[in-house]
Structure formats: structure tokens, C-alpha cells
Image (cartoon, rainbow, N blue to C red; front, side, top):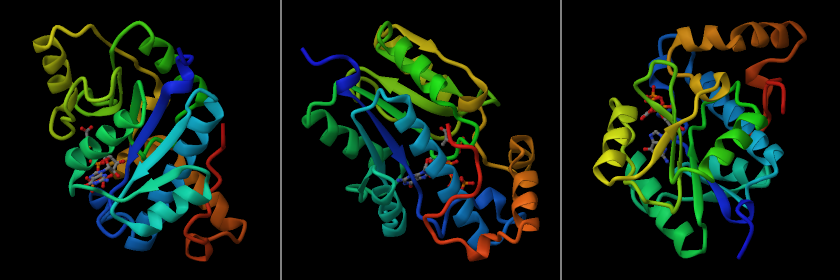
Length: 227
Ligand SMILES: Nc1nc2c(ncn2[C@@H]2O[C@H](COP(=O)(O)OP(=O)(O)OP(=O)(O)O)[C@@H](O)[C@H]2O)c(=O)[nH]1
Ligand SMILES: C=C(OP(=O)(O)O)C(=O)O
């Protein structure tokens, strides 16, 4: 029987860069929104890798630039078999289950404060519960979802997803738990989220030391502290 961690994998959905972070459109120009997505994604991938408890990290995206970055960071980059947030996740999770993944952590790409110890704690909780939910700071969204086995619940991301995942677990008589931590709670959707994260200050510091988002290669990250 493979150890628990050897059969845990992570799945990260990433929207195409041109359409990503639309709620930041009045605050950041398109190129900076794309750079922000890649910077946060790189941080999430590096943090998952640093936890040392995931056998695979798969990024599913219709955007080939995102997939290329994933591969350059040592993750897997899969195209969307089906278009759309939940449909793309469903198809990827089905393939991972077929390939032997027993526990699947589906996690947002926009968690700049995520820490590897939070990932480890969430996975530990997954040894006791078949469903672990990490709510967003507003209590409405869901920033991470651990399912054992994959697809024991359908993907329900969207409006009030946290409440809907709880209800779906109850309907299926599945024991579920919530895991809350600062790094898992703060996803970046709005300018207020960005301010709250401290990323804006960090960027201003970076820019004053002659770094600039425009000069960065697509896969280069800002200086979000790695785990
Ligand atoms: N592969 C894929 N990922 C998606 C899709 N829509 C959202 N995501 C990802 O799902 C997570 C939550 O995304 P949202 O915050 O809802 O969307 P967003 O593009 O980041 O921000 P908004 O455009 O402001 O809604 C992020 O990791 C997104 O990149 C999609 O259609 N396909
Ligand atoms: C789609 C989701 O993300 P967001 O709320 O950031 O749009 C969700 O949490 O279900």
C-alpha cells in the first residue's frame, strides 16, 4: 500500500492570462495582471513542492504560456479537456484518478501568502476526513479542496461555493472538515485583496530597485518570499 503522501497530488486550475483577474481590470493593466497571475502561481507551485508531500502537481489551463511556465517550474501543464473552471477540473481529476491518485488537493492559483506548513496541515487533516475545505476569507469562496478519493464530490466552484460544498458533503453523508489559515484564506480577487496581501508595497520596492514588471520574463516571479 503506497504511503499516503506518495498518492497525494495537487491540481491547480488557471484561467487564460488574457481573461484572468478581470476584477483587477480597473487597477492593473493587462500585462501586469498576467504577471501577477504567474507570480502568484509560481509561489503556489513552489510552496506545494516545499511541503514535500505531493507526488504530482498538475496545472490545467487553456493557455499554453501558463502550461510552459508550469513545466519550467517542475510541474505538469495540461490543456483543458473541457472548457470552463469546473468542467476542466472534472476532466483532469478523472484522468488523475485513472492514473492512481488516491487523494487530490485542488487549490487556487492566486494565494500569495500560502505557506508549506499550511499545505502539510491541510493534508494531515485529509488523513482523517475524506473532504477538507479551505474557505476564502469572505466565507463565500473555496480556495482549496481536498478530496479522498478524487471526485468524491463534484466541482462546485462559483458563487457561494463553500456553502455548496458543505451541503453536497452532507447530502452524501461524507464527513467533512474546514481548514482555515491566513495563507489559504487570502486569494487575490480585488484591489483590496492586493493591498491586504502587501504585494503592492513589495512591487513598489522592486520597482525602486530598477525591477519592473514589464522587464520580467513570463516565467520570472516577483520577490514573493518562497517557502
Ligand atoms: N483552467 C481554468 N481555471 C479557471 C477558470 N476560471 C477560473 N479559473 C481558476 O480558478 C481559480 C479561481 O479563479 P477566480 O478568482 O474565480 O477567477 P480569476 O480569473 O482569478 O479572477 P476574475 O477574472 O476576477 O474572476 C484561479 O486559480 C483561476 O485561475 C477556467 O475557466 N479554467
Ligand atoms: C470561483 C471561486 O473563486 P472566486 O470566489 O475567487 O471567484 C470559488 O471560490 O468558488
